[in-house]
Image (cartoon, rainbow over all chains, first blue to last red):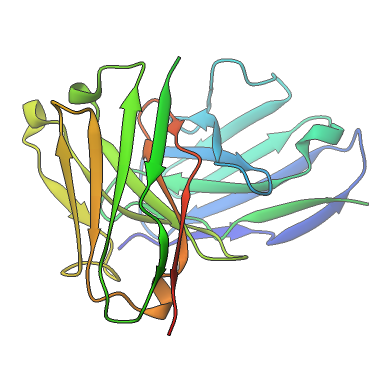
Length: 107
Length: 116
C-alpha cells in the first residue's frame, strides 16, 4: 500500500499568512493526488486535482505543486474561512490512501 | 442539482450487520465510479472502497480493514449505491460518506455506531 505522510499535523497562523502543507508518498504516484478541505461536521471538498489543477470555484489563493513523491498545498494569503482541516489523497493505486490531515487553526 | 443522500446508519452491536444506501441524483449515476469514505469520531478520512461503472467492468476494491466483511454494490436502475457491512467491530464506528471522487460529489454522511 502507498503511505501518505502529511505534515505538519497542525499549525497556527494568522489571517494574511502564507501557509504550506506537505504530503510525501511512499512511492512514485506521478501527479495522481488531490487536496481536500474539511470543515467540522461537513463533507470534504476538493481544492486541487492532478497535483496542481485548481478545482472550479476554488479561490486562486490555493495552489498545489509537486510530482512523484513530494507534494505541497499552499495558501498564499490565509483568510478566515480557510481555518479547517486539509487532507491529501492519492489515487494512483489501490487502496486509495489519505494523508493524516493538517488542522489549520487561528493564531 | 447534484445530490448524494446516505441512509441506513444507526447503532449496531459488535458482530452485527448493517446496510447503508446512497441515493444519487443530478448526474449520470451509471457512468460514475462510486466510493465509500469513512471518518471515525475525531479522526481523519479513510477510504473504504469503491465500485467502478458497469461499462468499466463494475469491479470493486476495498481497504484492508474491511476486506471480506464489507461489500459494495450498485443498482443503476435505482441510482443507488450500497454498502453491506457484516461482522461489524467497534473500530468501524464512523461517519460514512458516499462520493464520486472523480468529480468530487459527496453526500452528507451517515453515522454508524458499533457498540454493545
